Length: 136
Image 1: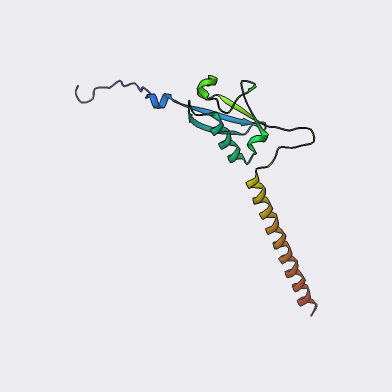
Image 2: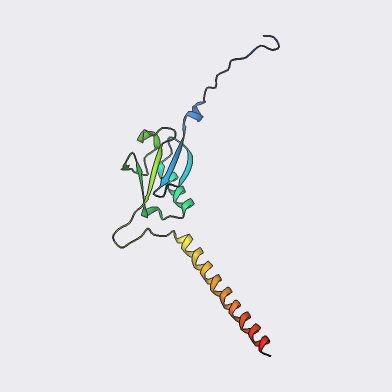
C-alpha cells in the first residue's frame, strides 16, 4: 500500500450495537418521543420513562404495538420489534373520567396556583395603595 491508495472499509456493527434498537413512542396527538434501548430490556422501563417525560400516570396510559396491547415485562426482542418501530401511547379513559395526572405534576401545579394567588393579592394591595396616594 502506498500514499494515495484508496481503502475500501465496511462498517460492521458490533454485537453490542446490534443488541440495541431505536423505538418511537407516538401519542394520540402525533407527538413523538424517541428511545434507544437494549433489545433485551423489559419495555416497562421505556414505558415508565415515557410517562415521566410526558407527566402521565403510568397506570392510566395504554401502549399498543401493531394494534395490540402488550405486557411491560416483555422485551422488544420478544415482540419482534425492529429498529424504527412505533409504539402508540393512548391515555386510558373510562366513562366520565379523564386520564389521571402524575402526582408530582399535580403538586407542582398546586404550588404554581398558590404562587399566582399570592402575586395577585400583592398586586391588588399595590393598586389599592397607589389609589390611596392618588386620592391624597
